[in-house]
Length: 200
Image (cartoon, rainbow, N blue to C red; front, side, top):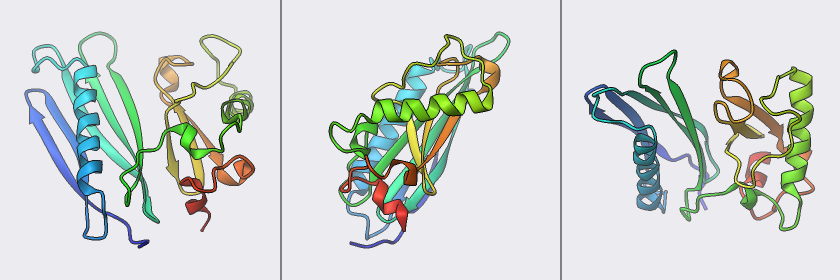
């Protein structure tokens, strides 16, 4: 199995008041190009629909992406869409996607941990502590728990859990990100999942 990063190309979807930049991956060593690229494009199109783009009549939409991890046959990225339809401010939506570039598997949060590991409670406890340390005012205190399918991406040697605008705090906070070192999760990490690849 090769450890070379996947090649990345940027594509553009343009229309009236619409500009979306999104990636596709390339490389003869990447065995699941079509599967991953199709899924990325499907997610881009879903974001356009979810944002309510109406052909530019009342909606202005801008989209971009960021690569978070691209090594050891692991690709993690985010798709960011900003939508403005009038009012005091627009809304942004962030989608995290994490893949095995050899199998094309897209990972859910639960796939990172051992079965019956109580990962949800463990991560929720860490996030609760970070909320207190950062003195973040919640919309519905106290913080109870992440969702089983909470949004995430992988970056450096961390699992980054994040929350959408208004999900747990006021708009002024923006997206709330909670980086958690993989070394703090070693006892519950699935040894056959993607996280052990970040140890190197």
